[in-house]
Length: 248
Image (cartoon, rainbow, N blue to C red; front, side, top):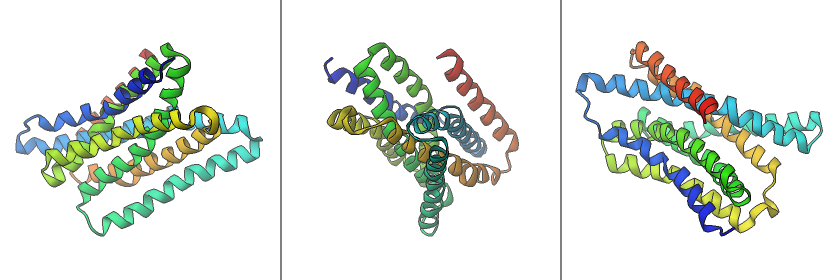
């Protein structure tokens, strides 16, 4: 098969993240801005935790456990996950010293999701290259959760800086990681990229996203004292996850 179409599919799936940034173009009355921020943060953390628990951890653990013995597989899986947790704390300390709290949340979201999109690009490219129908289904599912991921980057960046340009730029950079993953897949294809390697990356990313959600997004949402909008954001996030799981 021509490699251009699998690369195109991976690029569209990744850059759909930018669609999530368009929510900042809506005009919000000043008294509703905090509610919107809280809703977006709660929605985002639900998507991140949900994807990690329902997709990344099971798939990655299975990939690693099939390559190694049970004890080694469990140990390697825990190491990969814990490394993600440690990295978030490390980056958090560096950014906290210099930046606004909401801006920090946006930057951390961007970094975590860039790392998430990279292996997704590899998987999307390889699956499309081998089976176009499977690749299209996988790409559509990725698009559906990339859009809310774009929201998790754009909203905190925009409301902390007031710059729509910066919000779109950061969201675009996150989405760009997916075609980059596809390019890596093309250059190395399946020769050097193994299931176990992708499994380690996905567990590392799961550690990043779960820690980011619990340690940063949720406390930030609570600070606005709009608990009802936390519940609404989480509820909508759960509905999106269920749609992605059972409809797609």
